Image (cartoon, rainbow, N blue to C red; front, side, top):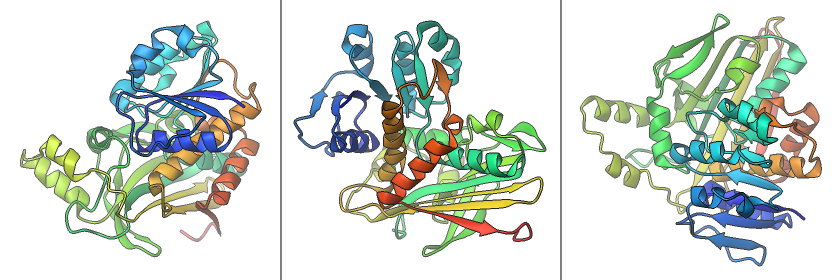
Length: 356
């Protein structure tokens, strides 16, 4: 089996590491403060060192079949840039603002290969938009709505962060890139707020965030948008505190701290309509299990599936930088099947051109 080096062991990183071990691989984890969710296993080696320090010497990476960057976005970009100096396979899940495609020249020069943004959104959302485009042609619109939330409101923030809370704050403040009338536009984050009905949960609120990333340039469409989904009231509280200059980041990090005792769920809708009127829609739902947060499962399973596909077919991707929508329909189909087998519900809704 393979040797996989995981840089970062937060909630998602720990899930990815343990799932890869479950598949029979040897996993080396590098994190100065690994999460409690890592469990002892003969095929797991944990080194409490800085990931960048580890990556400075190629000899450390020699022998790794794949290196997975699971670091927070504020440091993940620098690590990926360093990894591009070596002839290795890299899966980048750091969701940093500086996307890995800026390293395409360095990757080509050094025979490095990056597959990036293989989470749920971006990631699975890209794959579904790509499938809709392949099957129905140019899109009149494509919309992604996605969020991981507590199963019930708590009367406070009604939210806890499965990822780095700093990355969530960045998501709430970074302008959102969208496609409007075939052109890329920049709109304020948190704009276009609207209430949606999530089956089994009731009313939730969706608002624009900057999640489209690579599909802005890869999916032909008249309109493309991604919306984050939260319980109503959550984002208004954030806006009010920011406007009043009373948003205390350290306090927010504590109040959004993940609590594994609180039931949670992840929900995503990907909806498209082609220029010919053909409609496609997928609903993804996961409520976690006794061991893992739903967002960690949904995000990490896409990563694990992508890694497994690459290990099965080492020639799957040439040197360079590749977004998830570039994967073949066959690979995407297997990713969907595997996630369903793992208990993540992915339901395709068949609709007619007049269903809007």
